[in-house]
Length: 463
Image 1 (cartoon, rainbow, N blue to C red):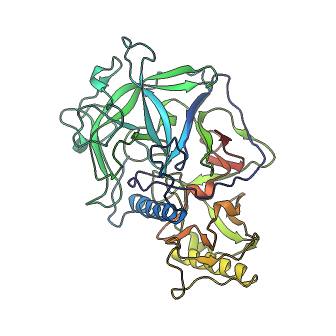
Image 2 (tube, helix red, strand yellow):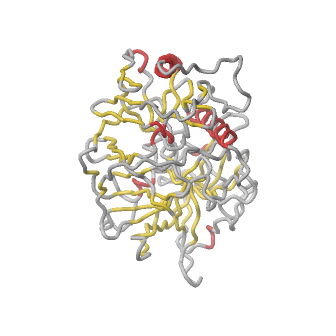
């Protein structure tokens, strides 16, 4: 996501999962693991309840995508500019990650409170965001605040807390963003006048991750940059949320170093799932992906420095290439976990739409038009009536430089008893969202030539 559009929870309405070949991600015996939660899971703080319909869920997903794209590519351009003492012998950080609304959450330990019995840190749920660089948590003394279920982080009481003066050489943000006499930050999402905004101070602090979940070992990284959110408004989260901030995994841009760089790692991986009864992991560090289905494509530059871009050459529907012109792809293609759905620039979307229409036409299925369209359909542009027992759905392939991403039907369509809708939207930028990344492991590697590796994988263990 690059980020928190507002609550607009709910993604992945399809709960059927594909059985795919596993991919090995080598990890050290002391790998650190952060947990992921699906939005429709009863364990999610944004659990919509039993009475929310699939159509209502899809419409929330659409709104989240629109708000997210506005954050990443606002009409009024907003610039998001841009010493670890960790245990270098630890190769992996693996965060248990859960999907929460439109957000995958990672549980992170923060601070040092030795007199307190039990863990010497306090745990917070941070949004796993490959489109943000700043890692921040809401802190004690905030006004206004996000409505947290737990107390805000008491940063001044932490024994590992260290302030950074405004204008100090260690402060990663410009002096205009100072918070009083301290190094500060200011991040705004979406609409420049009404979008969510967080301001606060940047401090040095200790971050702790669960290492090797079966044994519950802990690995800590001291002297890390951490944003303390002291003013957050316009988020629209429900009362009593557990979302306390952001775990920034982006490549660059405004603010502190991304978390993978702060802990001196050069790679991370994630695997997004579609079932609400599943869990998955985020790994930071570790060895490269291996396996017969693993392919890779180089990361390239793009218009937004907080996003990961790849070189998209063409798209296929049901194995038939569209023959896209290079001029149509000149804006680049981003891959982001924070955007629920994929967005395509208008000229590419028109060709993709026409190809889906041709595909279903061979089975005598015509799309709903403005007339005769049922009122209970999701707010998606391209929907078809669903014949009884119809199951001949196409794949969609993104042809990158040197690698193909084959998206199975569960990552393309949302379906009800009487409709089939394509979960892709026209937009001003091309971005592959979380729904189209499901059931694949993605591995961002800055050591092996700045590349993204991926392969199909059954991404969730049932819980």
